[in-house]
Amino acid sequence: MESVASELQARGAAAVTLLVELGHDVTLFASGDSRTRATLFPVWPKALRLGPPLSDPNAALAAQLEAVSNCTNQFDVIHAHIDWLHLPMLSRAGVPFMTTMHGRLDLP
Image (tube, rainbow, N blue to C red; front, side, top):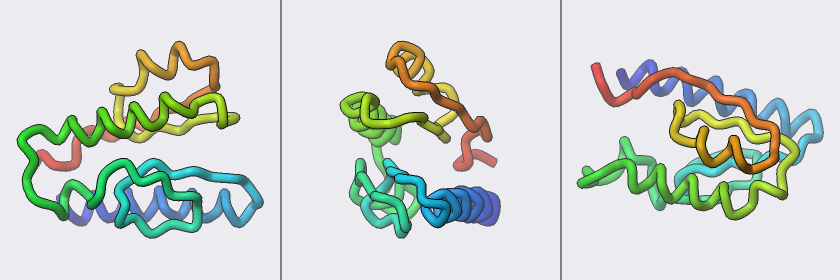
C-alpha cells in the first residue's frame, strides 16, 4: 500500500507544482511536514502514516475541514482529495469545487 500512497502523493505534488509554475496561487491544506511549492496551510503536525497511531484519524480530517471552511471565500476553486467527507460543507460554500475519489489508502 505504501507504493500506491507514494504514487498518488507524487501525482498530486506534480499537479500542485505545475499549477504553481503556471502562475496559479495554490494553497495546500496538509500536514506540517509536507514539502510543496504551494502555500502550505498545516492542519496536522505530521503525516498520519508517519506519526504515532491516533485513536481516531478522523480528527485530522476534521481539523482540515475546519481550516478550509474558515477561508473558502479566498479561493476561486477547491480541489479535495478526501473522498466524500467535504461534500456537505463545500456544497454550501458558494465556491466551485471538484473531488478526487480514490478510496482509503490505509486498508489492504
